Length: 259
Image 1 (cartoon, helix red, strand yellow):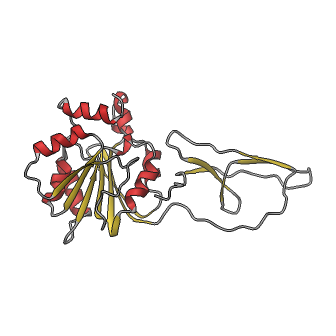
Image 2 (cartoon, rainbow, N blue to C red):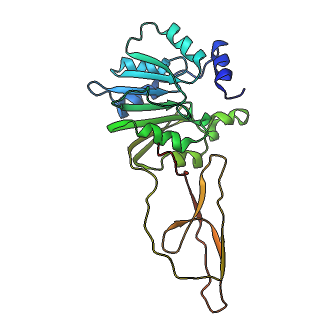
Image 3 (cartoon, rainbow, N blue to C red):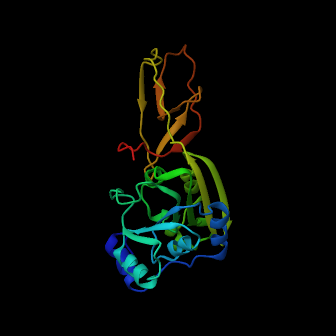
């Protein structure tokens, strides 16, 4: 199956769905993100609405968003009593998010959807920017280690899970029923800038490359001074010191749109 809006709408209108919300997941949400007074929640990739309705039962006013109209049609039909839930057709990766709640959210949840997002770092930054002070972002996803090989496209590996936590002050992880539950708080941004003077020449010539992976993250190296820099090589006179590269690290790409 493809990943277009039409593909997903046909998936849902054909009567298919994802795994039901487990009791352990429900308990974790109550423990980690109890609804405050006038609390508002955002269910991203809400599908047919089971989680959105559950969050409403906990006391939240909920926006359930999905980019597949077929999913939302079923959600409206299957949960006509859900007066505290607003169903919105939104692609959080590409659409304008101005239709979401202007005053933000106390809880944002992505359940079983992050594996289908291409630019995960950018999407998490967009959503984290909509958290109210003290708000919580929760990612629930299958893990490659516990997923059959033929279905691993719906799961993340440990490296991908680690990348999702970049830019948050507080990170907690729970594992339940072969799912990883990441509880992220205190978004601070992933990058810092430092003004530097023009360096003294250290090489006769040099080269640098930009290397990205399938998720769009940029490969960086750590210099002897602890700075993150592009992988590079330099030629130098025989009398100069040898340049030694530190092990590379990865980080998400900078979002030029600032979202």
